[in-house]
Length: 446
Image 1 (cartoon, rainbow, N blue to C red):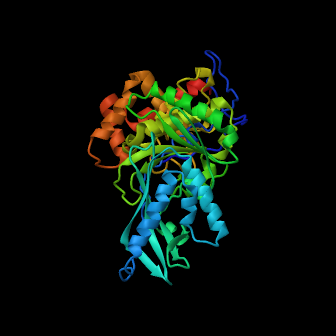
Image 2: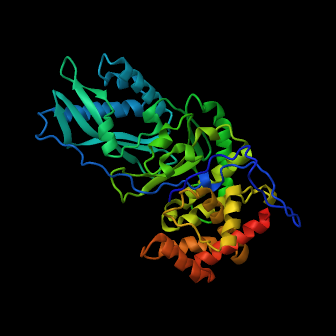
Image 3: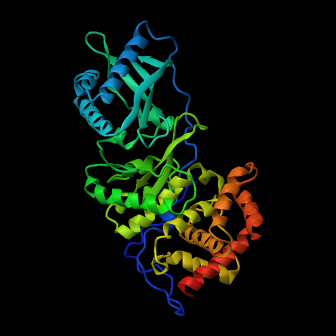
């Protein structure tokens, strides 16, 4: 599922909190980006691209062996922290490339590597003017966080040195990467600083690492809070990207709205093989927008609880309508807060009031969820879950998730969601939307 986020509401005097009993007033508030930032969970396949290029003829004798040797030595150098050996496999003379590779070595060495190796198919060797472009598979497992080694592909260039021995000359072929949907990880893009606490591996950079301690603590609290509410068996751990620029977020092909400034955070899956659309998921990671680095603790905690709910749901997010996925994440995110502190966007409240007056009210569709009404959609989805939990008990929320994950995928996810909702509660989507909107208005004021 994907979700987009409203702009942060920090300091926005147009947000609402629940009114005190017997008081009809609209409280002005400060809130994190409600679910809008929330549930940005990307599980869609983005592996489409042109077929891998192959050479017209087999490479000359010995080339496959030379490439295997160079890549094996490089992998051993990374695993065993042999910087000199790593440098010896690089082409001489290109100082910028060698500096970039030195930064890569330092960055990757900070990761708790369970597996790190290379492989390639000889059919994917392309000879160009005496050099060789090779589609290389990187097998990397972050120990304690990835269930399996993650296989990612990129196109490397190998050039012979003065003695005819192949050396790595490039790890970048921008056109090939774009055609094949390559997602460069933060350590592939530039220097990173890795910090960790129990259950959280944080990836920072020079501009964000000073915030690492507080962000890691916030993520730890979020794991504990989410674990107390979500009934599913999950790893209770997360890899958190907290970088000072939006380059990585912008590279996520299925990013809601295609603009990182529309989200405060995104939870995204890491498939075990980036070329296999049916591959299992090695883990789910979370990336924060830079503006969240300095956000006040309560807002950031709520945001991380939202995203960690998506991590805990994992693939189950694929089987439920967006209103349920995002509504659940918001519902979980506010559980530790006192009722008067559960801020709601004014856009959601106004939209609910107007829809009640016009009679045109329905749960948001998964297709249009992140459109122009995304802010209102998050609020209504949250309060749809609030109404279900209040009227039928918390268990009905998880029963909906379980039932949708156990039935054949016939029809759209929204159609199946509507059917499951009626079976469990007797309510249709419009009924639930109307009741949720009435509860919102009653809670936050007219």
